[in-house]
Image 1 (cartoon, rainbow, N blue to C red):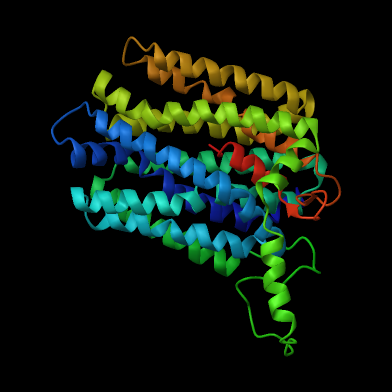
Image 2: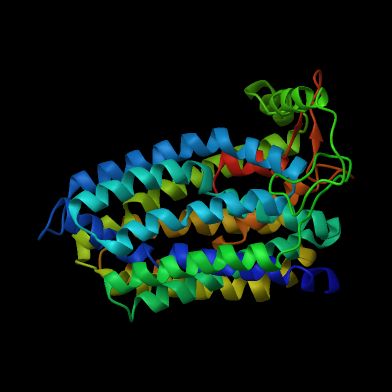
Length: 388
């Protein structure tokens, strides 16, 4: 447990960041409907633009995640974590100020631009940070605890939304996002894999000596040369059958999951006239069940059953809960389906643990053939399917 206790500042940073991000989810549906289709419970335009937003963010993340992982391997996890945690503040601040149609569109555009870099990158970098500091045999439990922290933040954030007005929700969310950025910069120690790699992007102080000016262009060119290309990602996927299979499973699973959650809240609002409070209640049930599962059950079941069997259980219940949502015939069915999170939350930590174990002694670095580029396998996995 000593290694895991050393991650407490990462856990707190992730908790504050997720708290800020999750607490606006129950409210954003009502804000979108009020801005686009005021006075109505059904709005196809809201579903279309939400789907468009998810598609653009997904494509942007697919390109950015390997680059983020590559740069974090070179410059440290803390430096790269600073960027998405800081960028998350600005879209929230817009809706904290006003939620009229013009401000909503400003939020919508800025959210797309920032989320292409931020969506999933915080969790992806956190996974890499854990892998840097936790032995291979304990990573499944550590990843489960990390996901449990996210679920705990999900519960606390959505529960707080239940007792706040819409305006206060976005104001508190903005304040918590700012607090997470400050806490991370002050308390989180950096984690650099290789001391021979270049210095952090965000320098802690002045350099001890004056570098040779002739070396500067070479260093800049080296950064661009080591940025992963599509060929590098394909080579990494082909380097291990287990890794490629995990990437496919992650992609298909998250494709279904993102599609469900992009339309679920609008469906429940149109079908059962749910509002912010019912959304919050539903998410609290999901979060509580997921938190109990990841913090208590998974550390026990992962060593006993193995990641492969636990992954099968998680995928089965993930499919089952989607089916129950799709055939919901009464208002209580979504609440029953939310309880399935007790088991379907197993899938993502198990996939990450399986992938992490394929990398070898260099942990998150994987050497690609020919040009010897370095790509983070966990970041490629995050790109193939964004974390929940």
